[in-house]
Length: 144
Image (cartoon, rainbow, N blue to C red; front, side, top):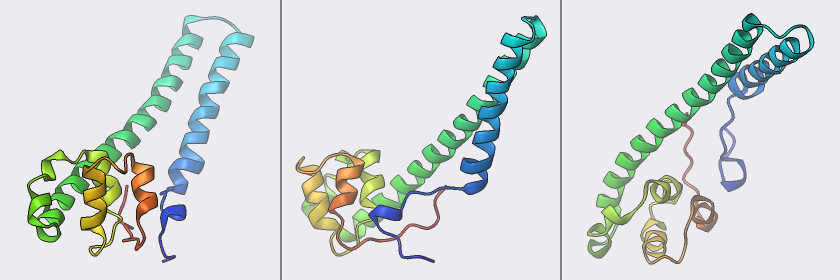
């Protein structure tokens, strides 16, 4: 596998991102076009609503998977923090937000304590900013 870093860590699943979503969007657009140009009818409206519902369902399925992934990451990171953080930071583990933990998972074991301290002290905020602070990237290839 290609070495993972900040610039290439975003996960795209080609079947979902490049096939399913475009086809669903095309179907939704085509349903609206047919309903508007061909005939306004209850059946046409039903097709538009169904196409919209399927499109929204695809996004919801993706969001649900990402939320479950974030919960698993939170559990994994809490266990990791118990092993790696100094005692003064262990007492503050509950202060980390899920977003902070999700971003900190990419920090190597060696740099985690220093970066965690910066995050808790408010010197670094937001997923993107935290990830950009990581010097030794710890890859995560098992993502949804």
